Amino acid sequence: MIQLVFSDAQYWEDFLPLTYTRPIAEMRVGSLTFRERWEKLLGFSESFYYTEKYLQDKYPEPKALESLLIVPNFLPSEKLLQQIKDLQFGEALVYQHELVAARVNLENFNIGQIEKMTDVEDEDLVIFKKPWDLFTYNDKAIRFDFDLLTKGRKSQEISTTNFINGSKEEIFIEEGVEMEFVFLNTKKGPIYIGKDAEIQQGVMLAGPLAIGEHAVMKMGAKIYGATTFGPYAKICGEVSNVVIFGYSSKGHDGYLGNSVLGEWCNLGAGTCTSNLKNNYALVKMWSYKDKSFIDTGLQFCGSVMGDHVKTAINTTINTGTTIGVAANIFQSGFAPHLVENFSWGGRNDSPKFQLERAYETAKTMMARRSIDLTQEDKEILKFIDQKF
Image (cartoon, rainbow, N blue to C red; front, side):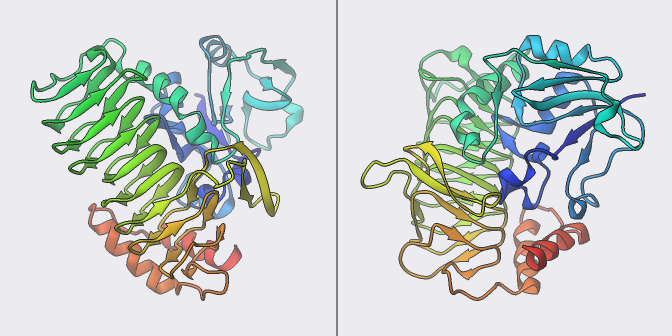
């Protein structure tokens, strides 16, 4: 028996604040989370995590068994995928001096167990190393997942009330989708719409685009690729090159571009995110790992929001802004480029959002999607509040 295990050892800190509440494998890009993608690629129905101790109650640790250990945050080529499948016990694959996969026994595991390391010579390997890589390389991820999810399958029929500009074959609709009088443009990439999603009249969709199950695109929404909406997302206004993990709402007008949002966020009506500096300079963003602002190398870069973020109506978010877990932004003017976890107001001198009230807010919002705030969820939020 061999188990699939995802390792956070190398990159977990690089993806904060998104990974404060989850392992890397539970982040979403393209149509799938990294875990979902690897399970499909490798034929596993269950997987385990090597991650931070405070996350392990919710995300189970592996057993002391022979394991296929994967660093999950990359898209494998066909050649590399076959190399991973062919790994023998004691062998590992290395890309640019970083471990990407190994077959080992996790009982008292150490690097000395690896008897053979093979360098991966793959110039086309797409690897995600920072939060902004999720929207930067989302085009590639959407295309990768579109092929993975639709190969050998037939899309549901598209109603004749919809207008298609481009190839109909580049649109795949799962069962239960409601979609009438919608504009779909596949000139720049495919469009995938998940089970039971609702696309209301007048919505304009431009690929590459992935819409998760039960997501709602509200009337008149304008969506540019490459964009991902996870399950139960609710979207309106203008959105461009964004990744939303799921269960978050941007239910009103306002612009959101070149950004990543975690789960259970809610953007108040008129919330706008700048994604371009007035002088067109490259954008810097906060790195929790480096404890400083670092160059992204990007001219277009909006915001990165951890889970449970809330913004008031007409909130203005500056270019290159990082917003921590459970932050509430409601004070006037631009928020600072770093909003701390549990900020109550969104300013550098704002008090902290009381933990019990944060629980109440999260519980109420999650109940609207028939999901419980578990004790494990509370303990994770408590740890973040006390330690970070």
